Each structure stands twice: as structure tokens, then as C-alpha cells.
Picture 1: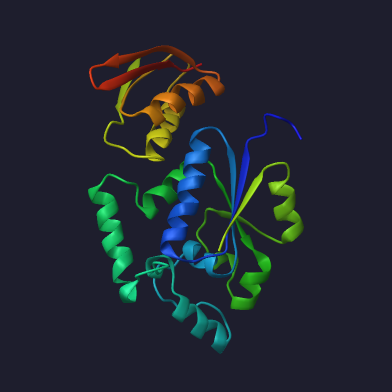
Picture 2 (picture 1 turned 45 degrees about the horizontal axis):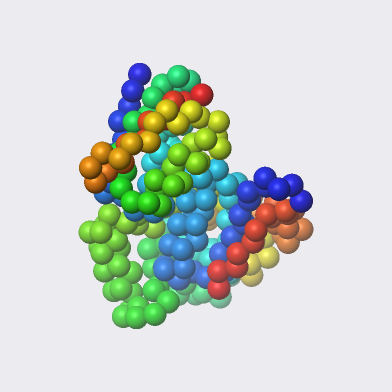
Length: 161
Length: 73
């Protein structure tokens, strides 16, 4: 392993608002201080990178559509504690703005501008009937385990559950 | 050309993000004159700039704030 490899790969399994903020904070901060950063989205984490921000009936099958409406998109990400029916993420975003802390949208814009690589899990998308076109354009690739491991190789890996 | 950047009101990670993006917009030889607060950016902004090959021309304490002057290479 080369000693100057600075690479961070984050597996975004969770679709919780606070955990998405944590993932994108690490990603943007890491990229800003010259780390190569990969974000791999799987299962609930796919909700963070859906193109349609609200509760859209994504997918072809009946169950796909039901699941995707219930899970929602980036605007519906719940707080992992004290969610209060979806009120808390809005309150939290207001508090973040008030204290000059970057919001999730700003962190995602920063990650994009800094060249963080966004990749999505082929298998989880298949289960949920999510197509690449249902995800934001910044998602460059839909991959499986071997490709993710190849990207993550010789770097540090974090799993956010 | 000198561009000023005040990140005293920003928090991690935007402090670092703004400097990196600020440098990326400049041409070689341009100067980024950064005003910042706090030990975390003070320690890591010059370090990250040097790692990228830029020249850190000065780091000064200016009564409560710090000024870090970076030349893009």
C-alpha cells in the first residue's frame, strides 16, 4: 500500500437525514483536503440520490411503486431519532442555516464541485425497481461489489448504517 | 491578481471546501488571500494548499483573525 494514498470510500446504507449529512460532510471535507472520495449508495441510501425529491411512484411493478412512495426521496429523509413525522429534518435544516453550517443540499453541491464520485448499488436498485435514470445525473455508475471494492482498494472504507 | 476570501463565519467542512474551490478558479500565479478563524482551519488550510503544490506565502495573526495568503501554482 502506498503511504501517500488518501482515499476514502463511504457506503451509504442509511437513508436517514442526519446520516446523509454525516456522509456528505466527510465526502466534501475529505475532497477539499485532497482525498479521493467515493460514495456508494445502497438500500435506503438510494433515497438520498433520487432525482425526484418527493414521494414518487418509481418503478414498474406495484410493490416497487408502493415501496418507493413510502421511502420517498431526498426531501423525505427522516431524522434517525426524534423525527416527529418528518418535522425535525426541516427544523434541523433551519438550525443549520442559522448557525452557518452547510445544509445537505450545500454539501451535495460541494461534493459535486469537488469531484466526489457517486456510485449506486446495482442489486439494491434491482430489488426496488429503481433505474439509473431515476437517480440524479451526478451518479456516474451503477456497480456491483467487485467494482466497488476495486474503487475502494488501498483506501479507507466507512459503512454508514 | 489577488482574490480575497473570508471564511470566518463558515464551519467545517465549508471552510476547506471554499478554499479548495476558490483556488481551483484562479490562474497560476494568482493570489488567494484567506481570512479565517479557529485552530482547525489554521492548521489544515495551509497544509492542504501545500499538499496540492501551492505556495503558502504568509500566515499571520491579525488580532482575532488569521490571514493565510496562498499563491496558486
